[in-house]
Amino acid sequence: MIQKMNGLNLIEEPFIKFTKSCEVISELTEISVGTTPHEIVYSEDKMKLFHYKPAVENPCQVPVLMIYALVNRYYILDLSPDKSVIKNLLDKGFDVYAIDWGYPSGMDKYLTIDDYVNGYLNNAVDYVRRESGADKISLLGVCVGGTLSAMYASLHPEKVKNLISFVAPINFDTDKSLLNIWAKEMDVDKIVDYYGIVPGDFLNMGFLLLDPFRLMIDKYVGFLERIDDKKTVENFLRMEKWIFDSPGQAGEAYRQFMKDCYQKNLLIKNKMEIGGKRIDLKRISMPLLNIMAQFDHLVPNESSQPLTEAVSSTDKESMVFPTGHIGMFVGSKSQNEVCPKIAQWLKPRSTATKDEIPKSTDVNSDQNKTDVKKSKSKKSNRKSKEIMK
Image (cartoon, rainbow, N blue to C red; front, top):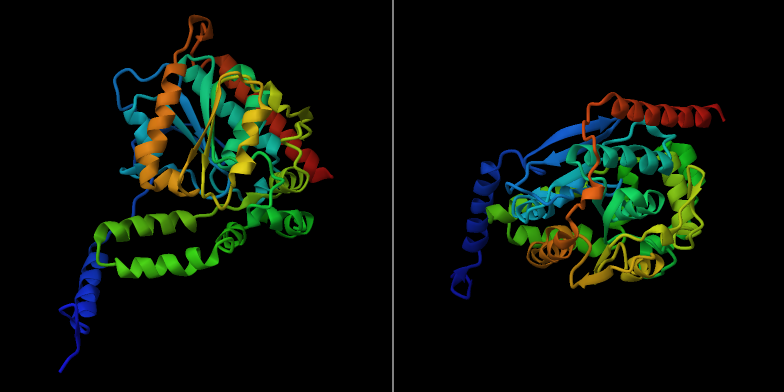
C-alpha cells in the first residue's frame, strides 16, 4: 500500500508538479525586461539616454533623470510592468529619462570617473534641460549611480533642481557590509593592470559571496517549490537575467572609485577630486531626499545616511523602508510604499519658475552641437594622455 500524507500520494504529488512545471516552461517564449515605451534620444560612445513616453497629458515641468550604477543594468528599475519604478513614476505624472551606460570594451579602459560625471552625465543632463525647457532638472541616482549623482550635484549645482539619493553609498568607512571590508584590502592596481576592463563576472561573483547561502542555494530551492506557477517562473527568470547581465568596468574609473571611496573614504571628507576639481558635498544646496533600505546588505544605512548631514540643503529628508537592497526596486514595498513616497516628496518640488526656463530650447542648434563636440574632444584628449603615459 502506497503511503499517504495529508491525503496526497507521495508519488503522485511530485509527478503532478513536475508535469505542470514542464507545461509552464514549454509555454515560455522570450523573457522581456525594460518594456515601458521609450526612445533613445541621445547617445555617446556606449552610453544611451532614454526618454519614456509620458503617461499623462501634462507631466510635471521638471523632468527626472534616473542614473543607475555602472555595475549591472538600468532595467532593474523597469523589470516588468508590475515591478517598475519607472512606470510607477510615469503613472504619477512625471517626465522620466534614464541612462543606460552600456558595455565598456577594451577601448574604454582609460575612461575615468571624470569622463562619466563631467562627460557623459553632464551631456545627458544638458540634453534633458534643452529638450524639456527646464534650466534645472531632478536627479534620481540609484546605488553607485547615486554616488555619481552626488558628485555631479556638487560640481554642477546650478543644473540640479532636486537630488534623490536612492540606496547610495557615500560614507565608505563601515564594517556593516562585507563588500566594504573586502575592498579595504583589495589590490586594486593588480586587478586593473591585469584586466584593463574589470570583468563583470569577476565582480558579480563577489556580490554573490556576500550572502552565498541565500543567493546561491536558498533562492533556487524556493524556485523549485513554485516552479509550476507561470508568473513565479517569469519573475525568477527576469531577475536571473538581470543578476548575470553584468557589464565590465572601465579600469581607470574602477581604480579611482575603489581607492578614493572604499579605501580612503575621500568623498564624505570633501577631499575627492575629479577632473582637477574637488568635490565638496556642502555645495549641494538643492532639496535632497535620501532613501535607504533597512536590511541592505550591499549599502548599509550608515553608508548612506551621512549624506543628509554633509550637504548644506535646508530642505532635506531621509526615509528608511523595511526591505533589502533589491526589494527597493522590485519588491511589493517598492510599488506600494517607496514610489508613492518619492512622488509625494518630488511633485511639489517639480514646478519650474519663469527664471528657470531658458530662452532657447532648440536641441539641434549649432551651439548645442558645438558644446557636445567640445566635450567629446576634451574626453578624447584625456584618453590620449593616459595612453601616452
